[in-house]
Length: 409
Image (cartoon, rainbow, N blue to C red):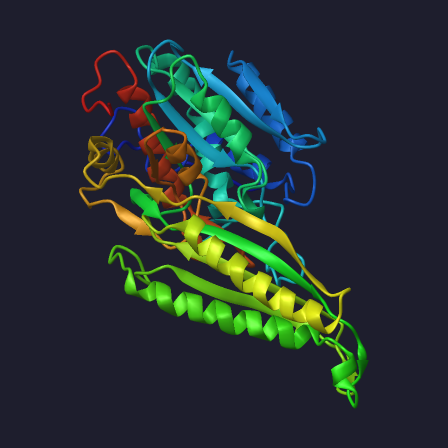
């Protein structure tokens, strides 16, 4: 990667701050992007890289592996473990690039026109690199309150790797006083997002000739009845609203329905994918129960036509929403450290933040980049965004010291 010259001018906010990302930050970002840690493969190469980098700076880390041992989260503490501190959370996995038309190599950082291109640059290796680049400052300044580095796997497939890491973080000798999840928010402080659960329904019917449909059990027709029922459930949920979100209600969405092979054959199989995104306060358990009752009713009707028929439910993903109070003092303080007086926002997408919040750790989302660029070809993050994120991390390091000018807690 051709980083080019990096200026040394200060902006007058904190001594040593730059107008461009430091060469070390750019190097770390390039190294991380070069590791193709898509969710379908092991993330151990990126975990190995991070652990080695931390060790070079005298920071011990521990791995929290999955059951198969081919993936792991990483947890490290810098500073006094006996004091309440700050957790910085990031995921190490990225989405695939197959079928996308990239103008630059997706797993090689490319700088062009003030932008750094590469898979994960916005979501969220840019933030991860920024945290790592600030490790020497955390080591130097986190003398009164610690910073905990919490790096997970499989976030892109439904936050599957975070629960064990969150549990380990909550079980620290002194749990963090605040967790900051660095998902791309244009460095705006976000306090809330919707929760989500998604399932795949595999409908098995009984095939036959279309001239004799009474001797068969149509899987597509059964799936269609479920779609109609899901739409009705979704419509009923629009009466409970929260204007902080768009749309301001819980949504039920059918994303895929596949089944059948030929018009003259009664389809014996159909697959339906749906998701529910819940506003804070929505009774997800009750919504799930309504959907379960709908599926059970359609299953019973299908079995009445053919005893061998069935509907299998396969979970796709699930994570809780985030609903941090808007008046949390740390939210305003974090915004000031990020250079803004803007009130906390809400997010349209989900993160691991809800899991930390559910574990009793107050949590906010704030990171460089834009979610609108994530998962797409030519994903990028602005060098100016990385610079601002690096400044924020350094201010956070100072805020964890003996005499912070604007303490978080």
